[in-house]
Length: 337
Ligand code: TXA
Ligand code: MG
Image 1 (cartoon, rainbow, N blue to C red):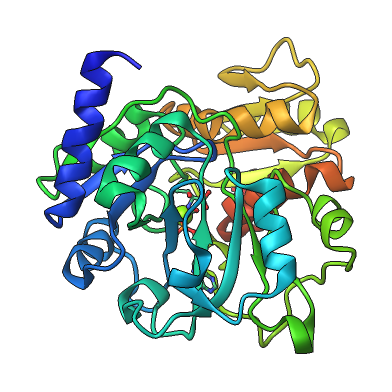
Image 2 (cartoon, rainbow, N blue to C red):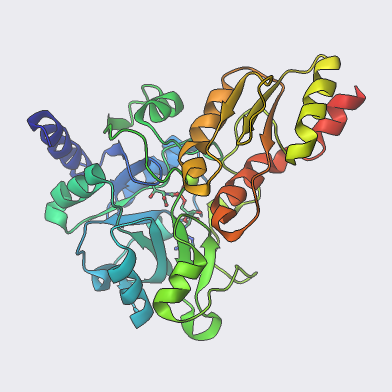
């Protein structure tokens, strides 16, 4: 790391210690960070994002952090997963230790905790409170918007909001979609529950702990990223099977409607468009930047070629479904009028 970069990191750590907000890169998406143990600092995150108060935030910790400082009743399975996947894109929901402020957990008795693997995030967490602190950080976007995967995306979201003391630039986030969230806070009664699919799959988790992972149920803790509509651009988004794309683009054009296309099989005539890799990791890496780029084209609609539905695509399909949620029936409406 260059001298300038390490200076940026120490001043960002100092800003966090002073109760200010710092945006920083993680391997999944950029986070908007505050000292997790300073409720006034955490309140600034909610204000800047426009996020409802009862939505808990994830606490980010340095490699080797003491899980028992943040959480209680830690099951062996959690420790095995930490050993296996941290630093990395896995968030664990565990019982919150009594001294952890309400502010980070939206008043619930649990806390979401993860150790990110992005080098800049790890350096920041090591510098902040000598590696013993926790940085509360949701994705660095306004509530409901597409998560940022570059420093420029963060600037696009917050402009020069004086609440942000710094935006650390760590290039494009390598994973591209948010961390897998696994609830282990009710392991004894409900088993491990997947709250948000991501790069680390339920199958990989099951392989490590030897227990199958359940999908969310009604009683599961709330997660804002699990609201039906989330991660959404301003333009409506519609998912379409590959075979329907060309015909739909032509029909929309006849009706004077402009459409952008995000695809992974070739459509030489579509424009504006973004072609993403036809495999889930490369697709996840590019999908949020693609949604943002197409949203900037001022089109009436963003069409997305629906990806395959096998397990490896679960995280990507989850985010695309949420991006499209508010837009049900939009194509039919456009073609009728
Ligand atoms: O990859 C990520 O997880 C990124 C980077 C910055 O680390 N963070 C992120 O944060 O996606 P956010 O706030 O946008 O989404 C975190 C999700 C939310 O859906 C929140 O409700 C859920 O985690 N969450 C946090 N703490 C929780 C808890 N105690 N119980 C249940 N859900 C929780
Ligand atoms: Mg988010």
